[in-house]
Image (cartoon, rainbow, N blue to C red; front, side):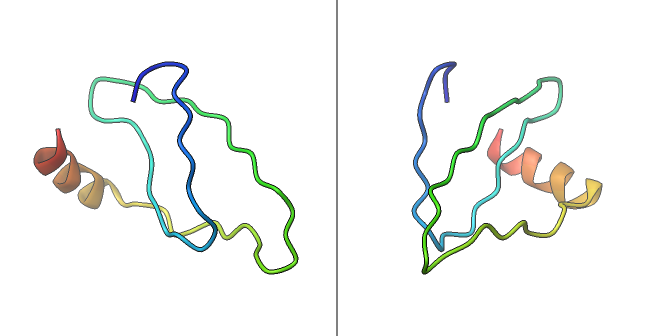
Length: 58
């Protein structure tokens, strides 16, 4: 992703977002009210999970 990019996540899609070691990440999230969906905040990623993912992705 680059500054200014717009990423659209369809309703009902579980996704994770965040920075990687040595960098930061900030974002704005917008959602449209919908009778068939709602915002669901998922579980926090542990430090161990984050570090393991960071090794394989970055």
